[in-house]
Image (cartoon, rainbow, N blue to C red; front, side, top):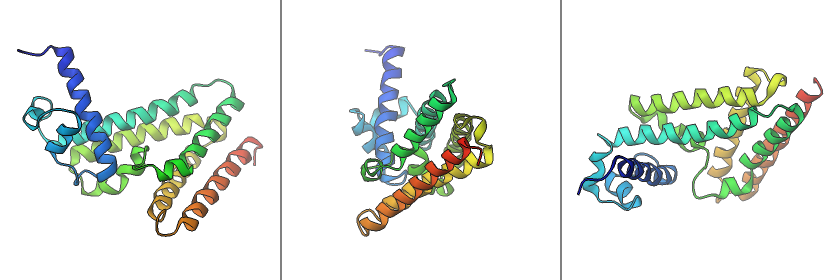
Length: 200
C-alpha cells in the first residue's frame, strides 16, 4: 500500500532526527545508512525513498540542526526590552557553558558538534553548515542589540564554542581543567556583556 505524502514527510523527519542524534555522538564518518535507518525505526532499503545519498542526509541534518539553533537566538533578538534581552542572552551563554552542556553525551550545539568535521566533508554538507553558521551569527549579533558590534558578537560566539569544545575534550582526563575552562570563559563573557551595558 502506498503511503501518503504526509506519512512520507513524517518518515523523512524521523530519519533526520535519528541521524542527527547519531551524527552528534559519533560524527558523520562514524554512522552508516543502515544505522541511521535503525535509529528511525525503519529498514535500510527504505533510505533511498527519502535521500539520494548519505551526504544528502548529512546536509539536511546540518541544515535543520542549525535552523533550530538560529530560531532560539532569533527569539531572544526579537525581545524589545534591551534589559530583558540582555538577561536572556546572559542566561543563554550560561547554559551554553554549563557543566550539563559539557557532560551531555553529545553537544547540543551543532556548531560545536560539527565544526571540526567540516574540512573533511563534501561540498553540499559543508555548504549547508556554512549557510547555517552565517544565519546563526547574524541572529547572535542581533540578539546583542546595539551594544554589540558584529565583530564583538563573532568573537563572543567563537569563545563560547571554543570553550565548550575544549572543556569537553578534557572532561574525563582533567576534570579540574575542564571546570576552569568553563568558569573562566563564562566569567569573561558575562563581564564583557556587563561592560557593553555600561558603555565600557
